[in-house]
Length: 407
Image 1: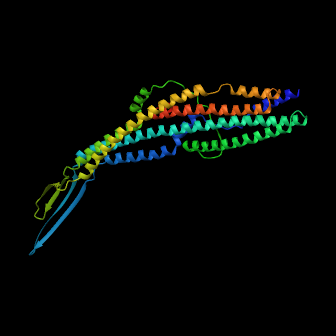
Image 2 (image 1 turned 120 degrees about the vertical axis):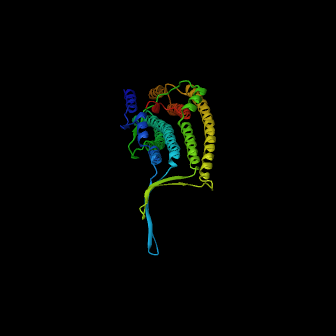
């Protein structure tokens, strides 16, 4: 009867429910990040500034109004005239379209940059979420083991009083409890730091409220490295942003080249003289291009185009290398997970517990079994984490994210 009560007590300890937490799924975390992440909010300001630049480029130049009056006199005679008129610069007629096109392309480039930033933010978010879930589950393993040992300590106290075990066995169990309690405390500190990072990425308040994460399903689908490279070069938003930036600079170059044309200003008005001669007047002012007007801006635009073209080549080479490395790493992590994980760990712990309570295992053998359970659980969790992290790294390198693709 005593043995039955002991086994029942230990099983009840193992099934104690943890304190309720706020459940936050990965989908919910992604939605919060896309809406509240400070980096994305900051980048929206650059988009707004680019829109202001487009509006400014669309504005026509202001005309100038002028009035002149002359009153001349000599030997009692007077003469004079007055003129009222206006003038307008004409260069905007051929400069304006290039400037507008350049600003619009730059705006589109910034939009692509924001999209790429979303991919980078979500990759960081998913790895942070994975890490938090990983630490949460490790803490649960340690907590369940600790509660098992605490229950065993209570039961062993009764057995010591009955003379069924030695005082050493009770002391050894108490020592293991202190060890696992310290390990659990360190894990919880690491988990809380991971939660803080996760809340910062999602733009949430860094309060003490815990999150209950969900386990992300393992996806061991095959990967074609060459296909991923082709997909990356076709779909990554940073490449698209750079292409649009180059086109924007080309339009900017055309704009600066058009400004090398001499400035032209056309004026018209009405003139009346004191001798009653009156009529319309037209004035055309043409700049004399003696000093290479706007030459510096034109040369700078050309250099910027060359620099961006080189950057694009470097970026594509970097992406190809990243995708190849990420694909190889993911394949390796899949193989490690498939060949390295240990199955039926819970069954091993339960078997060791029952065998010990029946006297089939010594205390040392039982504690060794508990240690094997913890180490095996940690190894399984680490293997799953590494595989999922490598999958996220591969998707990020290739410019793919299921959450953004489904928007």
